[in-house]
Length: 232
Picture 1 (tube, one colour):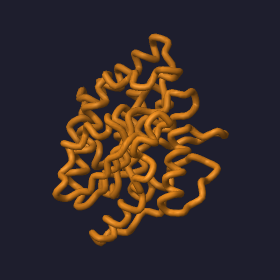
Picture 2: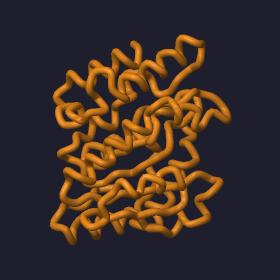
Picture 3: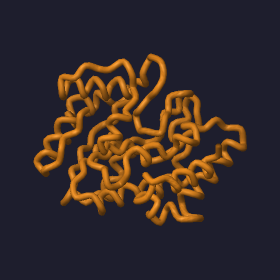
């Protein structure tokens, strides 16, 4: 399956009804051009993550009208076999990606929850947590992080963030790291909560991610707005 085929399948699904109405998903627009660039990468011999059928998993699992929290990452895990289309999520054998280990550690410190053995964050996505990367694909391999940031995904994900800010009454945006925080101007902070901190990666987690308590803060804010909390 190509990225363009995956995009067509996504847009034909019921879950894509609201996302697909965005101009970036129209024929010939930015999403189609980004997928064409991804397909060219594969044709040139590069291994691209995630698998094509998972590129739009975050949007499929969390339709626009269900979004209550946005967790924004930079791009998928470049480690072979790690990316599954949901930011920070992982489905596979141990060990877990180190950023996810740190996320679970902060969740434990924040909410007193034990770390699970697995890393699949699909249950979060099904509750309205949009697990979005600023680029939806990446080349697999060491030192390949950020390799697809210039392929056109930024316009697509900027439009997604803008749509959540415009169309949802109340949402908590959790921005981990500088690339995520660069999207802050897209968010209407008169209506939405922004929680910004360092990235959970081992290189930066001790510089403000640990102790940031994003899970309890997001839930407290949602409840104050009359929304149900997330079962993290």
